[in-house]
Amino acid sequence: MRPMERKRSDLIADAIEGMIFDGTFADGERLDEVQLATRFSVSRTPVREALLRLAQSGLVEQLPRRGVFVRQPGPVELIEMFEVMAELEAVCARLAASRITDAALKDLHETNARCNAAVEAQDADGYYRENERFHGILYRQSGNGFLEQECLRLHRRLQPFRRVQLRLRGRLRQSMSEHEAIVAALEAGDGAGAAEAIRAHVAVQGEKFHHLMASLKPAAE
Amino acid sequence: MRPMERKRSDLIADAIEGMIFDGTFADGERLDEVQLATRFSVSRTPVREALLRLAQSGLVEQLPRRGVFVRQPGPVELIEMFEVMAELEAVCARLAASRITDAALKDLHETNARCNAAVEAQDADGYYRENERFHGILYRQSGNGFLEQECLRLHRRLQPFRRVQLRLRGRLRQSMSEHEAIVAALEAGDGAGAAEAIRAHVAVQGEKFHHLMASLKPAAE
DNA sequence: GTCAATAATTTTGTATACAAGAATTGCGAT
DNA sequence: ATCGCAATTCTTGTATACAAAATTATTGAC
Image 1 (tube, rainbow over the protein chains, first blue to last red):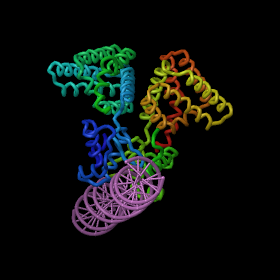
Image 2: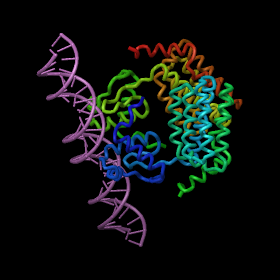
Image 3: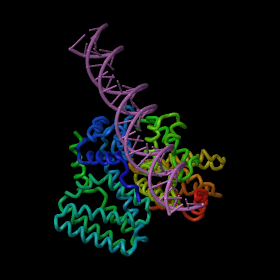
Image 4: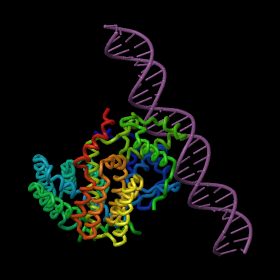
């Protein structure tokens, strides 16, 4: 479908993105073009294009004639993004309730089963993979390709913050039962119910809120 | 808030964007870098950055080593985008119902009045301006800055196709009454009602669908 | 005459060079 | 010694130069 990883600047963009996620570059830090260029053994040109892409996706901020700075979302923006994610997924669920195929329902069930097995086996990577798949199926089954893309975009953006959420004691098991509630509502064709179930599943509330805030403390030096 | 129009490449991006919207560049047409560079009396560099920005926002497609091509949304994608817009605005309305300020409600009323006046005066530009304002207030009153930005993004993207919608006989008057229904629901704190009202307002359905399709015919050579 | 292979040309992607604006440092004055 | 101003240095933004790849054109064979 998409023209696969194109040019060097795309690889660099992904690399820098990863470095921002894993904390190599702290919030507010200036990303020096020449420094990055030498680090990647390229000229400034592809680095600039990479930074431009990251600026577009909101990961860095470009001040005119000043440089680009890592822009980690603050607590407020993060809450806002999770709220939008919850609402977008709720829309997916509501639409999917009337559009979903039997094959997709079966797929959801199977994915949930594998996800459950991963939880029991303490297989964190497995859990992430199957969880991603679960949400991906939901986006797809909204029957709206544009919505699907938008959801994937925001999902990707929130990924580094989602990891934190799952550190919570017993959160995985609760998350699984929420998944099952969602599938049940979808199976019953209950759009409103599915929407509400996934909203509750994604929303940052209660204990999740405090943990999210705690995970941001180090950034607030 | 944001550092205002920064570099030449941004101006060029906006210019090309406008040219795509107003039909200077047809769907599928290749955008030649050197041609654009000479047209804007700059080098290829800022043109390339501009095209990169447009590619990120989905207005053009970049094939690797092949060039960038104008990518107008087809009928299906357009319907999908309008559906997402309707859902996003519905979310705004639902959230705004419990978060909106009295001042904003007053503002909505006044904006609607000016909008109505523009309709009576056959003032198309005035109508557009006040309509934009109406929706902008709604986005803002969702109380979610991130959601607001996302709505503005999609709204901008759909703008050229919205013009068509309003050509419909009596559509302006109907649109106004829909605005009033939305405000009434917000005033009553009826989130679900406001959401439903704006969904119906934005959604492409009935006659609107046919007109939208008709407006795309010329593109399908 | 048509098709294929190869050469020429065009065009994208990257590197380098240059110009203009911002930050910093050094100097002078109070 | 501190504050203000100016000159230098550094960085970004733009232009140009070069390299690799893709398209097109040309030539040759069947």
